[in-house]
Image (tube, rainbow, N blue to C red):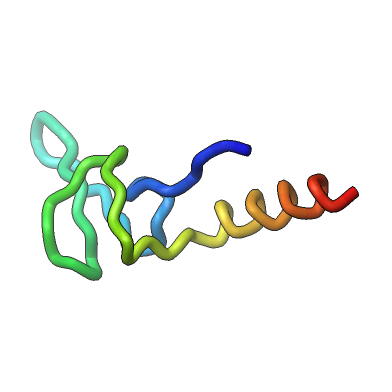
Length: 61
């Protein structure tokens, strides 16, 4: 199974485009983060929840 647990797949992850680059923030923690960071407060977004449910259903079959 793929590891979906990272900031980029969390519902609190926010990407903000600045003049020359992108900044990534956690709206829950209020900190700048990176897409690959992992924290214990991870809450998967809707798309990831669907993928996780799909993977669990395939495993059960």
